[in-house]
Amino acid sequence: MSGPTRIVLADDHAILREMLAEHLAREPDMEVVAVVSSAEAALAAALAEAPGLVVLDIDMPGLSPFRAACKIRDRLPATRVVFLSAYLRDNYIRQALEAHAAGYLVKDETPEAIVGGLRQVARGRTAFSRAVRARMSVGGDAVTFGEEREARLALLTPRELETLRYLASGQSRKAIARTMGISHKTVEQHCQHLMQKLDIHDRVGLTRFAIREGLLEP
Image 1 (tube, one colour):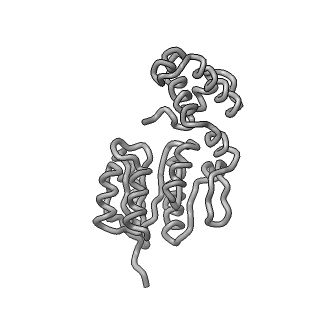
Image 2 (tube, helix red, strand yellow):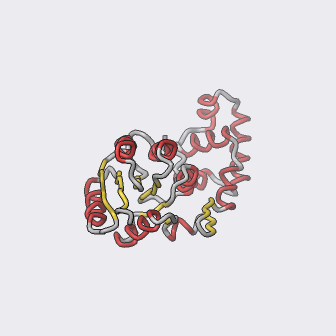
Image 3 (spheres, rainbow, N blue to C red):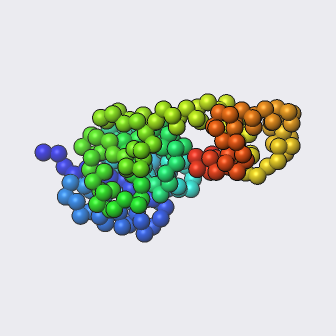
């Protein structure tokens, strides 16, 4: 008979991580082997403990949790990663899937629901909150990003994405041209293409889209 699932828990909010750790400690089939406050610490703990499950908050300073997840997967293929976040953004969900996460749970779920989702992952399944699943195409345990949402960002070229970030940060088109080292006319063309591809036809709408997708974050 196999023992309890060994878990590394990472969240930079002390109260939240301690509360979740306490809930997990009450479960006979789960054992929290490390509680840390950064992705770097989670990676180090995972390499030291080789747990069955690593739970990562998304909004932590330092090393990107998505990069940490990829490193964990490369070094510990048997360890599964679940993201736990207060944010519901297509860009975050996409990065989680690209990191081959086994789950993405939102923090407004009840503790019981979160524990239940982690148990599903420990048993070899996937666990995505309902609000996350609404943004994705899910068939059995095969999870892909919803085609329509993915297509919107996938249509943008790297230069168009760069232009969108600068627009959303409040730069004028002339300033964008100087920053990118291109002509004002080219910036205008990028803006026109952005509006056409995203079906958003004003700067306020583009800014809202960029913020919702997390495109302004480093």
